[in-house]
Length: 303
Ligand SMILES: *Cc1c(COP(=O)(O)O)cnc(C)c1O
Image (cartoon, rainbow, N blue to C red; front, side, top):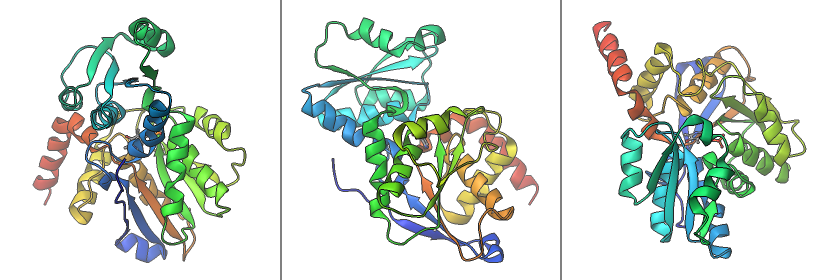
């Protein structure tokens, strides 16, 4: 894949001044518009593996707003691979799925029950294609963790803390692996975006034996995966207007909201530097257009 651009950008805010912390954002959202953020890092070695094994067709899984499906569709088009997306739920045409189709991905819709057994679906659908390769939901795999670990080698300064959102936890696993492998003392703060995310510490332990530097913050899920609240959408709107950086309501919005709250409640010490990872995936915003418009209308009325 191509060279990437993902700068570390410092944010200015009176809260940070008051608490004596410096806050930076690692702009992985700038890596690519569609193979965005952690999905680029995850797919890098997945595509590599497919190449090495002579596979030419990635088959993967996701919901109707899945950033992973979109990233896979685009990456496959780039690599000259076929792509199939097995989609949980009914055939509806979201912005994300439209883009998947534009990149040539074949979409197969399946009900929630059969969606649970992904290996079985793969076997049924691809039994006659020797070039097909199974890629788990969200790209979750050792290759994904390896790609995400590389982020740590790119950092320009030493940060006391690194903060990221977690769905499957593969990205967090990779980051912690990078921290441990480099012998750094950086603390990794993980914000799960779904409710009941105890499995994430198990996932991470599966990839990294030493989890001394790991902190899970489980209270920023806003009701669960893809659930939201007006305060979260208002936060995303004011953050965008103050920084020029967009966040999505499913992942990075919850992560950044959590980070601001953690700074406010004194989780970090004076003098600490904190790096928030922008994992990209901005099309999630388009899944909440109506609610966002309502929030913006209310904000205008209250000015
Ligand atoms: C997929 C995704 C995540 C979750 O990554 P995991 O490795 O599954 O934890 C986080 N942020 C964004 C924007 C994503 O698209």
